Amino acid sequence: MFKTQIDADEKSSILRLCRNIEEISHKSISERGEFNIAISGGETAKKMYAELVNFDVDWKLTKIFWVDERCVGANSPDSNYGCALKLFIDPLKIPQGNVFRLRGEECPVTECERYSLLLQRLVSNADKDGTPSLDCVILGMGADSHTASIFPCNMNLLSDPKLYAVSHNPKAKFWRMTMTGRTILAAKKILLPVYGGDKKTPLKKMLSDISNAPDSTPISTVISRAKDAEILTDIDLS
Ligand code: 6PG
Image 1 (tube, rainbow, N blue to C red):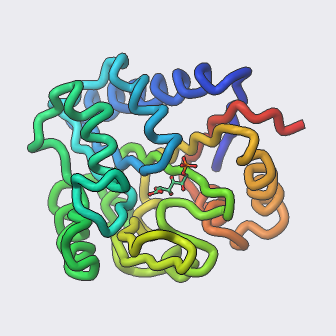
Image 2: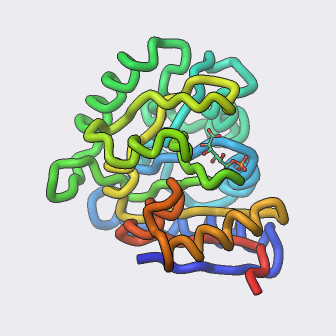
């Protein structure tokens, strides 16, 4: 199930995105005393972080995970963790004990195994097949219809039984580690911010694919199968 929220401009949509995260955190904490969120990387994420610092999330009761990470060190400008650390984790003084980075400097195979076990240990909420169910997963969408680090060339990661797996796309600068489709689809809520004119065509393609060929791309597969997904955009789809 999914819905699309179109706002007049990017800033309004980003504020809506942050309000959604705030509301989901309040609900999760009131129900279970905890909030488990996984965040993506990329330019859209950076825009979200800059605003998220102004919203009322109880970060002391929040565990922050990553949807994916590049196989680089935490100090690399390409590190998804490094970017989040600079833009919202450090500014908000979020305790490091609540922040669980994928270690891009480690062997990706063993790190995906470590991180999968960590997620199972720390996320008590699970769906019927025992997959850890995060309260909120923030995805991005690439112009090639990838999401997380699941690309059109490695769609097998959508059905991989692991929770996290190694991803390699010849067109991407780095090897990566990514949440598999199993873990993404176990999330209670998926939020997908998509901004900017260069995303109009892939966004319209995704919506068309969902109607006509839902399993044709990584993003259309994930959104069409999500328990509850919300697409937030400033793109006029008419
Ligand atoms: C990454 C992301 C990736 C990103 C999309 C959108 O590590 O790069 O997780 O999936 O979300 O590529 O990126 P932009 O927001 O930069 O367009």
